[in-house]
Structures are given as structure tokens and as C-alpha cells.
Image 1 (tube, rainbow, N blue to C red):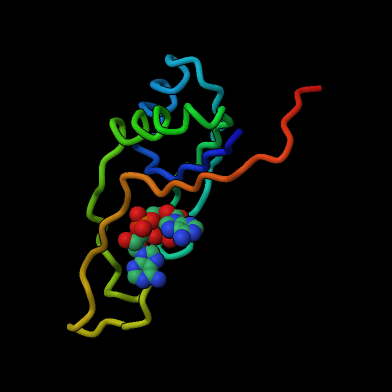
Image 2 (image 1 turned 135 degrees about the vertical axis):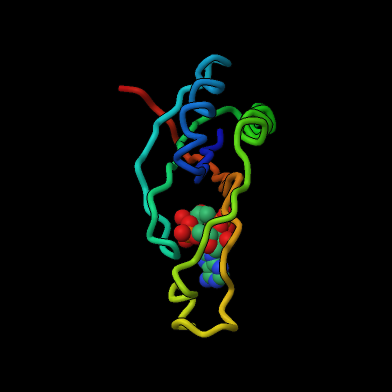
Length: 107
Ligand code: 2BA
């Protein structure tokens, strides 16, 4: 069994959750914050059998999209307000971790 942790944009969270639950996956939704932008994002937890990981990844991919996010003068990267500072970063579609689950029980 695997645990899939997917960090996604708030704006995609409902679509992804709906797609996963419609496909009969169990999902837990956490309100999280990115360390870099210090902006809210959503982390979804899904526990699935190994052979279903690719299906879950596809559903997440189909329902998320990458977005440009403006930077406040590059301050996030320690550039201060220098003109050399990048003006934006691209966030998402999804950042996904797949972890081995040693034991899973519902008591
Ligand atoms: P944030 O940490 O707020 O990062 C937002 C976006 O800023 C990132 O998008 C990336 O484009 C950029 N970024 C982040 N850290 C950076 C750095 N040190 N230098 C330059 N640019 C940087 P994504 O890569 O799509 O990440 C979206 C969110 O996913 C992140 O929000 C964070 O919450 C999570 N995340 C991404 N990679 C992670 C990792 N390796 N471990 C844990 N969380 C991660």
C-alpha cells in the first residue's frame, strides 16, 4: 500500500477532491502553507493499493494546472527589491510524494 501526499493549489482542490471521490478513492484534505510564498495551499492524503497509484496521479494531473505567482519584489528569495530579482515563480500543478505504508488499519 502507498500513501500519496499531493500539494496543490487551493483553486484546484475541490476539482481534484471531487474527481478522486467520484472514482471511489478516500481523501483527506489539509489546509497547508508553502514555506516559500507563505501562501495557503492544499495537501491531499490518499491511501491506495500499489497498482492504483498511477490512476490517482493521472486524476490529480488532469485536474490541476501550473500558475504563475508574482513575487513581492523578490523578497522571498532574499533579493530585496533589486531589479535583478525574478518577478514571478511558477507554482504547481501538483507536488506529489508517494510513500510506502508499513501498516494500515481502520479500528
Ligand atoms: P512554496 O514553498 O510556497 O513554493 C511556491 C513556488 O515557489 C514553488 O512552486 C517554486 O516555483 C518556487 N520555489 C519554492 N521554493 C523555492 C526556492 N527555494 N527557490 C526558488 N523558487 C522556489 P512548486 O515547486 O510548484 O511548489 C508548490 C508548493 O509545494 C510549495 O509552496 C510547497 O508548499 C510545496 N513543495 C514543493 N516542493 C516541495 C518539497 N520538495 N518538499 C516539501 N514541500 C514542497
